[in-house]
Image: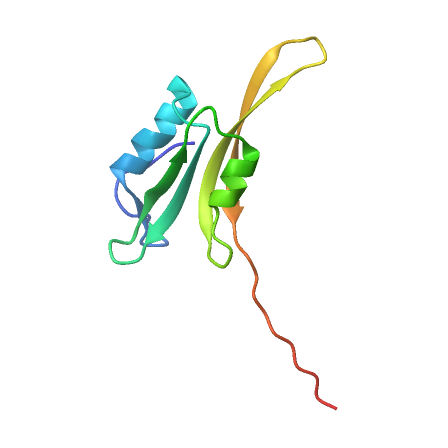
Length: 106
C-alpha cells in the first residue's frame, strides 16, 4: 500500500499521517491484528477509528465494524501452509452495508 501526501486530486480526500504510520506498524512490526479506518468528513481525510491487538481474532474484528456505516480496514491474517510454514497476508477490506427498501406498484 502506498500513500501519497496531501489530498487526492480526483477525490479531494487525503490520508492522515497517523493512518499511514498505524498501517506501517501493522505491516512491519505486527503491532496490530487489524486497523479500521473511517472518513472524517470535516477534514476530508481518512483517519484511524480503531486498532486491534495481535491477540484479537477475526470475530473481534467483525464485531468492531459498524452495522449501518461504511469503513475501510486492513486485517493481518496468519495461517500455516501445507508445508507447515507460518505465513501472514494483509487484506484490505471495504466494508459497507446496503440499506434499501423496495416498493411494488400494482
